[in-house]
Length: 508
Image (cartoon, rainbow, N blue to C red; front, side, top):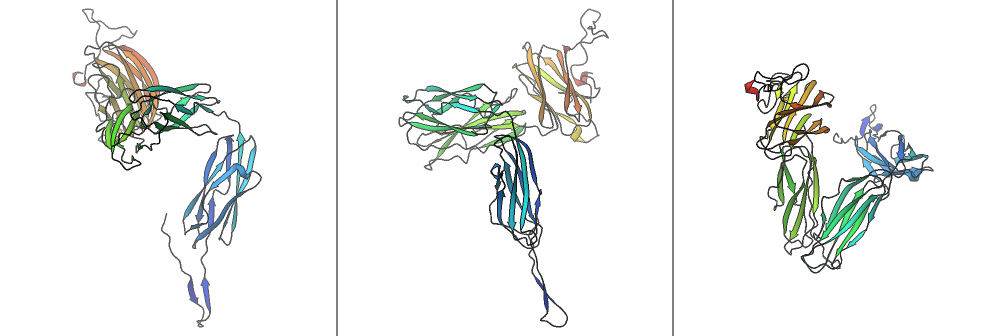
């Protein structure tokens, strides 16, 4: 926004008589956009939201005195703004407007803005929308309070919490946070992000392991897309509940992140109600399938880290403990690693010794050809525009034994067709393996497939069509033999099957 410029009234002398003066006044000028709002169809019990921009196009300050809703259906609308409100020249204010239909009918109301704009002191903005039927989720939590009763210090008791969906649409748990004592814990994954289909339920198993005799208490706050119960609180009690105020673990949750980057975990905002010093315990709760990440660096510090090796979801947990030995509830952070390159292909497999290789071939390139096949022996070929590296593929991770991952990336692919292929290069005493390939286009996972493979077999995953970012699945799986026009393996003179092509780029 441009800086406000101050204008002053100018006294202009008229004729020769200094007593005759004309004064040029400056005025505010209120402009709104849009001039009317139609929310269209909005499901009953849900909301539609938008904003109205109020601009001062005049030279003097615009003073907004009131913003009100009127009309028979005014209760279905709401507006967020603090008045009185003063806007300098060219300054913009945003009014948040929400439509929440309660029945399946059309609605209409008027939003009235009163200001010191002399030409339009009262400005009316028509509002409209229609309430329609749509299936909704309906969360049901049982019980709403878990009391573990009397439990001896150092021993563990368990209890079950049920989260059911009694509605007709999928229930999504957008957030699930535990507060209070760290003596309570979920056995298994934090359910934040879980989806529960209509008529189904999710069971959470809780444990309680007291470390002091005075009792423990806590809460478990569940937020969901249930329109009439967006937040529910489950109370946790053990050994009478106690009266502690517990330290709180707070994670500066760094999301989204990128693959192949150092990810900092920041717990410095964690607090203790009595100001006691804290110790930190970071844990790695989950990584994407195929990831080789298995530990956090400096897990006992308020700043810890790990390196995200592949795309997908990483989950970390943090518990802080004060010098009195009282621990916080575990706080979790889920981070989605999203590739920044437009073209991102990943390979992983499920055995510890085998060496599988990812190949990306451009247009009609042959297996192990140079420069057309990007793989371990041709890691950064020059494709597309010469010397321009943005359209070149890059094998950024080459795993020579066990699990992977391997990935090949292109920042800005040129238009055309690209083939994805996996080769079982060396077994290193492993037998068959399950290979998995994931392909991301423009940061979105568009294809995932798996294939059980044997040594020296190839798997043609599919063809990537660019710039569409789609994958045409071929799924051809065969031993790396040469074949005749009938698809039969060619034999050497001694009757041995003729192995196709080179084993690497240099031997072609």
